[in-house]
Image (cartoon, rainbow, N blue to C red; front, side, top):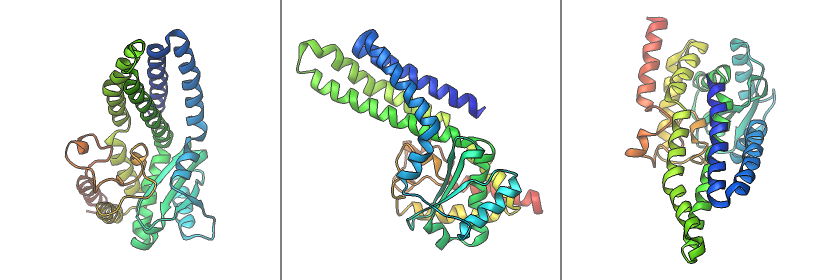
Length: 284
C-alpha cells in the first residue's frame, strides 16, 4: 500500500507542476515542468534521505556507541538488515527513520534522548522506528518531505508572480494564475500530503514497537517525556515538511487549534492509552 501511495504522490507532483507550467508558459512551460518533475522524483527516491539527515546535522556512529548496540539488537529481533545509525547534536529529544527501503535505511536519534530516557525507553523509541522500516513507511516519508518542499517552492514563486504581475497589463493573467495557485493549489496539495501520511501509520509503529520489545509501557513513558519536552522547545533543524518523520511532532508546543486537525501525529495521550491496552493484552 505504501508503494502505491509513493507512486501516487510522485505522479501528483508531476501533474501539479505540469499544470502550473502550462498556466505560465503554455506547452513549453509544461514541458520544462515535466522534465523538472521527473528530475525531482528521481532525486527524491535516491537522495532525499541524505538531505533529511543533513538538515538535522546527523552524525554517523559505529559499534562503539550505545545507540548502535540497541539498534543492532532490534534489527536482529525484527530480522531486518542493520540500518545506519546517526546522532543529532541537540538536547531536544526526538528520533526518526529514513531511507528508500530496509536495505538502505537509517535511524537517527538526538543526544537528548540518551540523556533523558533509560535504556528500556530508548529501546521503545528505536523499536517504533524499526517498525517504520519493517513496514516500508520510510520511502513514503522521505518522498513526502521532498514533495512538500517542492509545493512550498512553487507557492512562493506563484506569490511573487502575482505581486509583480499586477504592475503590467500583459502579465495580469500570469498574476491571477499565480495568485490562484498560491490560494488554491498549495493548500490542497498540503492537505493531500497530510492524507498521504496517515495517523494509522504511527499507531501501527507504536504497536509493533511495543510488541518487538515486549514492553509497551516503556515506549509509552518515552512518548510522554518526549512530548512534554516538545511543548517547550522545538527540535533544531525541524521544518513543517519533515515534522511527520519524527516520533513526536517537533512543533507540538506551537501548534494548536485547527492545525491539530491536520496533524500527521495522533494525540500523544491516545497513543499512550493504546500502548497501555496493548500491555494489558500481552501481560494481563
